[in-house]
Image 1 (tube, rainbow, N blue to C red):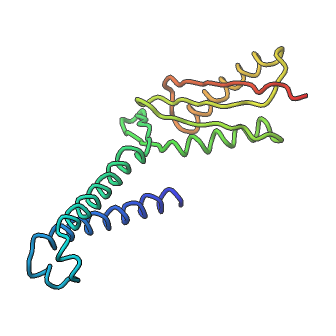
Image 2: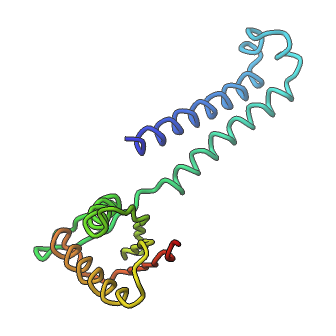
Image 3: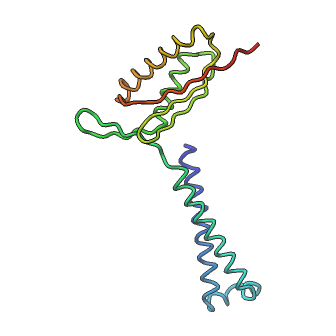
Length: 170
């Protein structure tokens, strides 16, 4: 829900600044509209223009930020019957969160999912495991993730699994 309201609020704020900027520029350009404003606005046309340009620039910068930084990351999966499905990275994140909870029920496993160039990158910082057991656990996790991605989501392409283990706490 937060992912919906933050962009919406930011969009409304950016529109406010853009409209305020355009109105400030129009007030400076129109003598009739300018006459309706207070006397100090009439005397400081340069200030009003600079204010309008500044507000317009802030609005454009916020829109640019939204466009570049809040893009949804989707993964395109082609099915056997030639249908394309687009899956949000949050779906993968939820599956991995549930998997980590099942594997380490008493531990919180910090992890993230990144979709880049239609490839999944899974990173996680696993709890401490003795060195002798790490290799077997990594092989199990790799097999489980591969099966989960194929069975539940139909993803059978290459993926990157970057795992690290925490140090032993004394």
